Length: 130
Image 1 (cartoon, rainbow, N blue to C red):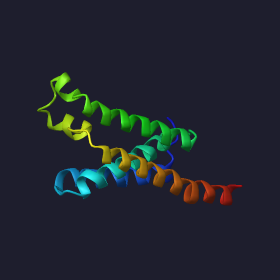
Image 2 (tube, one colour; image 1 turned 90 degrees about the vertical axis):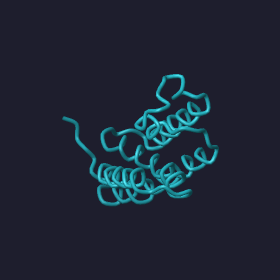
Image 3 (cartoon, rainbow, N blue to C red; image 1 turned 30 degrees about the vertical axis):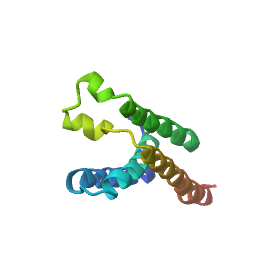
Image 4 (cartoon, rainbow, N blue to C red; image 1 turned 180 degrees about the vertical axis):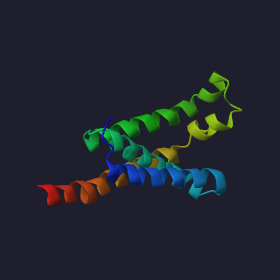
């Protein structure tokens, strides 16, 4: 079994719970559309690093490309093409409409994730363990 890196797994779990709370209980015009998009990329970043030792910059880039791809799939009507336009789960995972602001939220989320990782996690680990 692979080693799970708790310094990433714990934030990933917390963010996953927050995302569920937002999806189930929040129906506003700011937190759900913008906060959810901001947090989901941080969740994905932490989730990947929970299981694999990969250069954080590559993880941020990969999560960004993945997130942008999902957003552009919305622009192309992916859910309708797949016949999933009435699936609540598909709508929750993929979203329903393209919004350029989502791209900004993904970008800001990844900058924050990578920056906090660099400052608090990686630098502290170097300080403690050489």
